[in-house]
Length: 223
Image (cartoon, rainbow, N blue to C red):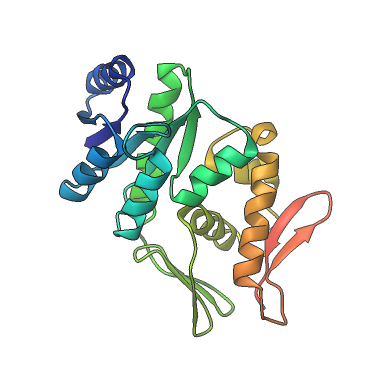
């Protein structure tokens, strides 16, 4: 399994590379965002680990460009900022998870395993709830004949809701299964992304599918 680490701090990059190679991964390094984009488009990586603040091209711009080019590999963003706004910005750019510096290497490897496992499991049969349809292979969503454009994190959240259609899922379940973080640290972000999905999935439709169950969580209901 091959991983690309895009990090301009040589000591940090070397630390990550050595640790991941000891875990059995093959690791390439890129020292800035521009080099990272070139490498990621040239070689098929199972995962990208990318710093946010880098010279020549920052991590958010790099990830956004890679997603526009059709790269589907999961991205773990490294950042010194952990406010809700910063995390949402990273997720909106196309990253799948974030890790705040400084970090414990055991946590990094746990995130790497989770992202790779989730990516491998995402390929499977098409899901359908009412007129809402999701293809986990093509990573496309339709409501009736209308295709819905979703970010990667919005797609993962909707897939989770669809796999549990008709049942209430709590915020803690979403935090654990979609982001694999604690509920406390992701409460606001979950609410933000539920609102994003509602605007895209339910906007312009008389029947609302993403429901709030007061005091419990959320439920996707067939229209």
